[in-house]
Image (cartoon, rainbow, N blue to C red; front, side, top):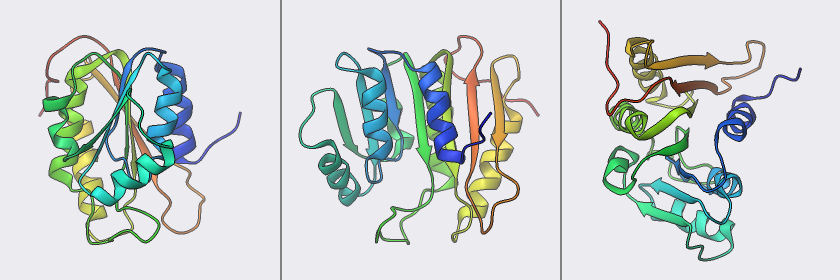
Length: 195
């Protein structure tokens, strides 16, 4: 068995749950790495919705994709608005929190409220057995508050509907990201909360 870093583990799980022809979501397009990865999973018949609030990120994603691709929708809007654009069922969704890497504006970061709202909405659209992976980077300003909000939200989801797990490597230097994974266990339009 090989333990992977958070992002590689997220991709391993997506490979196991996403099928050709499905609809998937890259909730934080960034530089397009996950968008391209998800496009490979769903193939020519699938659809990828990639969200970002920065045009620079969508331009970088389009460049990584090598031009226009009819199956990929690049959306300049918050992932909290995913339900306005995406129809279910969704095969899977990926989040990479924090800021746009590679000289991006580090004052523009994902926020707890919009991230939790996006996950909550996408859980309603997710297929039964589908996954949402969230790479949590908490070493930047505001990252700790987002981490705490996500962990509190995950702990309040009803276990009969959603399984939520945390995956992390414990002996890494610095502040490596960790992964929260949500698995939809049965059909619902909006997850129930406990407590």
